[in-house]
Length: 81
Image 1 (cartoon, rainbow, N blue to C red):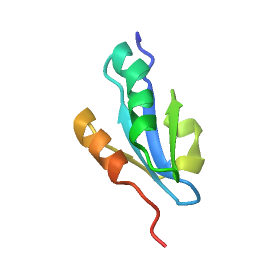
Image 2 (cartoon, rainbow, N blue to C red):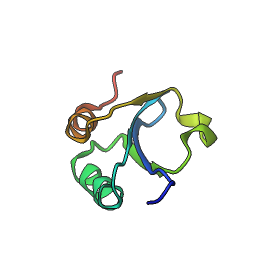
Image 3 (tube, rainbow, N blue to C red):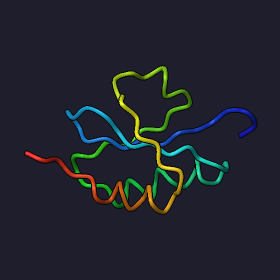
Image 4 (tube, one colour):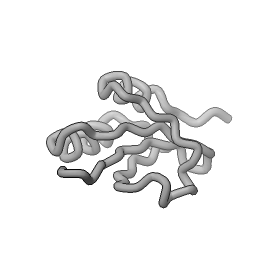
């Protein structure tokens, strides 16, 4: 990945804010989005970004450093009426 960071974010459609994970290896950047797609609920959007600051529509960003914790949090996301 070099100096370029890859972020995977998850957000509920039509809700403000998201949770984000900064991939630590190229393998994480390749595999994590597919894993999240398999476990996400239908109202959760998964997006891969290289510069979160360029996408204010997803703000505020809540960064989670541990990949397992991040996956668990994405699995728990669902819309609250």
